[in-house]
Length: 325
Length: 266
Image 1 (cartoon, rainbow over the protein chains, first blue to last red):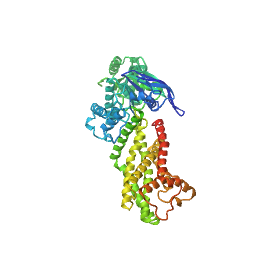
Image 2: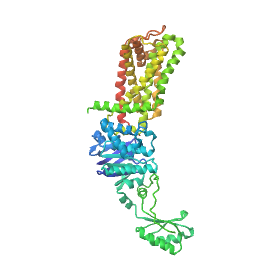
Image 3: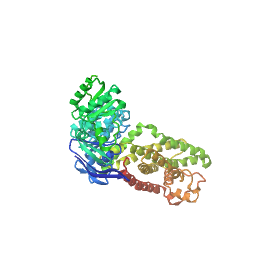
Image 4: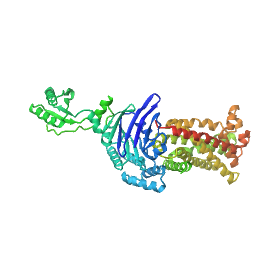
């Protein structure tokens, strides 16, 4: 449904896209993950015909952005980085206008606007100006605008950037429902958590090219095994505890004396955790906190690019294993 | 649907949206209303006494109209630049809509501001003694000519917005050219009083032509002591001003549309 083939695009001497290849099947969500300046927005602009590639081609629903841009636009909905709503128009007027611009007649545009306001929980504020809306509501209205014409492909450029946690959950909910209806979605994000949550398939891009791709699970697997993190209560216990961990895991534990934290790779994390804790207890080494952590996409990203992504708005809570201490 | 009906339809959708914006942001119209009133009173009474009193004030109205409508091009520049700065235009550009509609919708809806400016100027003129001394036909022709000119300069504003890409730049670029263009003209003084090269520029300046044509059609004679304007443009003011407007549209509309196809936010 979406196919990007060897697309390059430069702005002066800056290579925004450098031989980018992407593919998304019908009814799937492709997550495009990368830091600022990695080429996400340029990719979106090429796919939505806002920008012509220097070389290569992209196809949306089988139509080339170069030779059939009009057909691409007919099959595509865009929700850009900044909610594209007219603040002076009401929610209804915004959607009605977009429907008309997609070529619907007055009556159909009106019916579709009301239908979407209902399904995006905006019916109550249909007659209110979009300028009075919260960030989350505005984004919902913008997403509704992207699917007015029931496009086969929806492109969402950083749909939750700048939203509060509630707005983000709202948006995720909407995206999930889109996919349930069979729409193909391309989603760009800097938030690993978001890609993890929404995307069937993730392409990690940096400097305008794909540096890794796969499902979220596959990418995480490539980052290595689970880790056990233990924080000790007393500094004096640190060395002894480190040797317990190292012995149990069969690998050297990393020590962080400042935070009294120990960390070790643990291929069979759950089983090992129980052993480590009972061993530490048997030696009266007091544990403040213990957690079993799966590698996050953050770890994947760090490993692939050598630099971290933007801090996710919500920290990735490590999976806690209940430890009465 | 043919390309032209699609363009007209999409443009009217955009124009409607712009008009809703105007109605809901009445403060934005203040400049369009206050400025002509201010200029009528300032020029009519500060310079009017020295330049011919009542007769000058009546003569002045045609000039104020031409000046005000030229200035209205800056509204197009600023509001189109504002739209460009929001993500809204990116959305429009990703829609299967006419590539002409966003700008044609803007220049069309900005005519409403110009209609308001003309109405205010004429009411203000009536209050200080300006009258139509010809007939309703000629007066209607004058209004049509004025609005055609307003529509034409609005396309200059559109090109400025599409070139500037930011509201601030559009605002200053949209204003700087207005002063020389409106003052080096016969809008407020007799062209004959200007020195050599300026006089030639003023004689051929479309603003002069529009002011002269409006005076001719409304039947407002020059005050005594104003040398009668000479040259082809003055003798054929109605025709020349219509040609100027059409010429401006012929040059700036394709420019604006070509720019629109090219631009992309960032």
